[in-house]
Image (cartoon, rainbow, N blue to C red; front, side):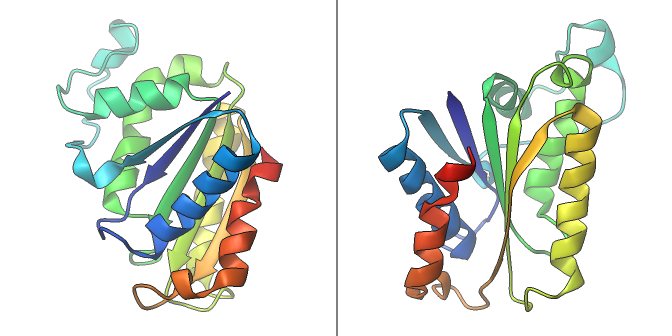
Length: 180
């Protein structure tokens, strides 16, 4: 099974990356899955132009950037875990651009049974609506594409390094492999 983990935090070693790394460690230590970890912010991904070129070109996007590579990796993965810090009550622009670009494979993606995870990290308390909005967005994506949302992890960690100090939460993240 191929597991793709997409980190959309521009921070080199922020709480989102810490969370995703812990989840990846748990998967690697307990499963025989291929795990690929990608820092999305290191790639050049432009937004979808809604030109529909992809509808007449077997799902190939007209934009010649790294978005095509990332879309192909999502397409090939069995499990995709999206990680994002909360920016203005939503996911980062970097991961949103990648999600928008999967539109080029829209006609075939809903035929693939994928397992999806979202790990969102914000400064607000877990009861804040920002986490609900992100969860709702991924629930809609999964319903539309007939995918299974298996991980919906919300983390409150305000300062850089806060999550790394929370050994209980790190252990919980390492146990997410059980949901796969």
